[in-house]
Length: 187
Length: 292
Image (cartoon, rainbow over all chains, first blue to last red):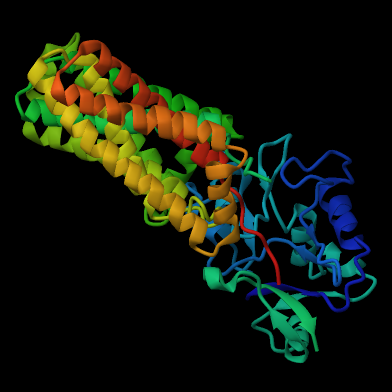
């Protein structure tokens, strides 16, 4: 099983519902700041490119890389790739060295100020939902249908169907991380 | 300008500095003992042990879950994951090397101070070679630790470990220059220090040059911050002037005639420069920028 995320930039309306839902579901709607990225505590980072003539946004999160640097550098095995292909953290094994944070080329980990734990997609609630056969909250709440989630090994999964239809890019592929976060940039 | 804030540059800079002194100090101790130079080995063993202890204090000080560390490492060792991680994580290698060096340095310190009976083991050739080897590996590890972070292109550079080895060698030579009084040993240290100073200047210039022109935006911005940006004043003053230029000029002066006060000044400048180098390289780290 290789679970993957897809975000369709051409459908996204930039409403931020996914970000708010992630904050609500995984971080109990806390209003505390995200000390690493700024803004609210959520696993989705909004990057705005001000190109003047054609500004655009990029919504990024953990890429659940098949060759994840954060997993490789973790000294105790706290960061690991689960059987479902998702990159997860075992808090019992984390010493808070933050090596995973400097190793992630996407900068997709942030430090929980209360527990000192590097946080990332997926949060605990989303992990439970996926285990129960549900979609992560960001996919469920998206009003534009810009998000999909599913198994790359299943030809009938929503992710695979949409990968066949659109023009897709993966971020920083040259880093050799084999990311499983797909960005649809057009049809 | 958004510099990395994941690792505290001062705390981790001090860790890397002390690790460098402990590492190359161990190499120096081993070489001195193997070369039958007995002068100030007791003092050197104190410096090495104190440095490794301080290195460990500083690295633990930057952990965000320090209380979880002992159990987490024990769990990882018991499950066997820790041993597998030795093949993928420089942090795991570092934890192992620092622990081994701590033990080796403690025995050396005890042999030099209160437990002369340890002489048989500690003065054995195999023990000295092992101590020197582990010390050298600690220095290599401290370089690869940050060079192995692909998220920060300025660090993710093969010149960092080279620079760290050269800079740590300068620190060890500086410590010896402070300790040793014999003119012939001091003269040898001056010559060695000068050679390593020149090599360090070349390595530093190479790191900046490669970062400026490699085409990676984040690395270029890091190098620019050091050369002509927010960190330039500290970089030129503490690293280039105090850390490289002054020791080099004083080194040439000392080549003509050894002078204790000048030697002490050169050593102090070299140590300050090495610390500033680590802090500023860490501070200058900028994460990769994402785009489509």
